[in-house]
Amino acid sequence: MEPEESTETMPENNEGFLDELDLPPEYCHYQDDGCEFADSCLNCPFERCIYDEPGGRQHYIKSLRDREMLRLFTTEGKGIRELALMFGISQRTVQRALKRVRNE
Image (cartoon, rainbow, N blue to C red; front, side, top):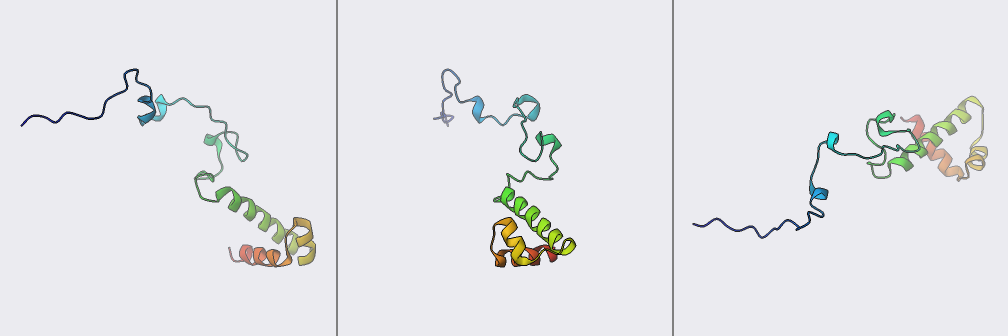
């Protein structure tokens, strides 16, 4: 039996070849600019990047908002209507957010 010839050929000038390699981190050079939550990925406060999770950033922002609403509701005595006006959301959304944060 004769060995099969490969139908894949490497581009003559090697263009695109290096893009397909999965190099170890020490051979990859990129600028770590971080995001709005950390100045670099290495200093990130999250275990896993919130941008890797579907809706991760939006979920995080909403949870911050919800916790702030609970704080204002419990410590400063703000009402549902007042919180809705402050955050630009409906009164029902405030009620759902407070319930969600209390159950955490």
